[in-house]
Image (cartoon, rainbow, N blue to C red; front, side, top):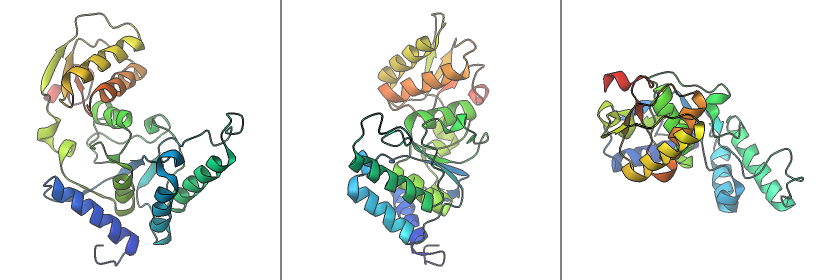
Length: 247
């Protein structure tokens, strides 16, 4: 693929993944089963980012695994009602159309696992969006790092990712135990717990004891808060998450 036999876009994007792997001293690249791509808003991309995406599409970049999109910078159907300028809306439409040219599903959601994009336990994936990463690692038991927009696109096109970080068993082990003594009654309670945990632990993987029986919504809120106040991309919950028993 690096030699260009699968097209210039695949070769160029593979170079990006190889360089990333070298930075993190990854032993090799591994196949990934799905991608969730961030960097979708025209406000963030601007013309420069859109031009780069267009170049990849023109060079033949096409997703070879299932790939979904993070939210755009506006509601794609009701943008006029929301007062979005025509110029911005046109730029955002071009962004979505460019991703569609590359075979990416225009889902525009930060919770792809709620619309059928659900990785299997133990599967290697390449996801961006901090809350989705935390949910997939923790609740689903899939394996991904907190990827960026360009690397998730690169993984979608090549079907590969560098083997480092949370893809490895040794980095999925908890570094701190969090004993929950208070009764968690509402989703907001789990959000507050996640916020305090992320603020205290930074990027350390927590092992929670005393979570009770959280709903899917509560687990989503816990992970999103952990990722917001800190850099947590994986948590374990005793009797709750699939890998907790091994820890």
